[in-house]
Image 1 (cartoon, rainbow, N blue to C red):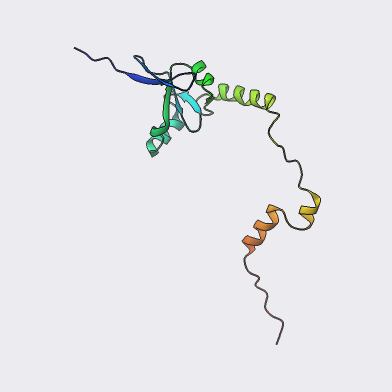
Image 2 (tube, one colour):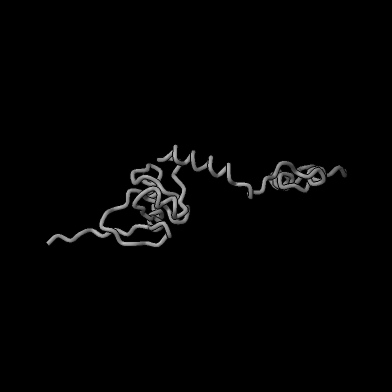
Length: 130
């Protein structure tokens, strides 16, 4: 008697469910990315280790999208481009920084001034006392 393979897929509500067929798309639970099972970026991450513990599978692409996952830029560039275009058109809540306030820049209080001083290290000037 041959035993049927059992797979666990993720549904649109992000709940796992058993399936008798394997998923067509794989994803990463933490990054909320989905892509093809033969994606070179995913396979490289799996070979380095650590990725497998966060791996999820989807029956189809609409289920992955409904679960809140985005397409992989490596193996699904067209879907990724469409996703980023949709995000740019609808994202009005993201804060946008256009300029540094004049007082901050003039007084050297900005992050660039702080990091440049830190990189310069201690002053190398010699004392002028003889």
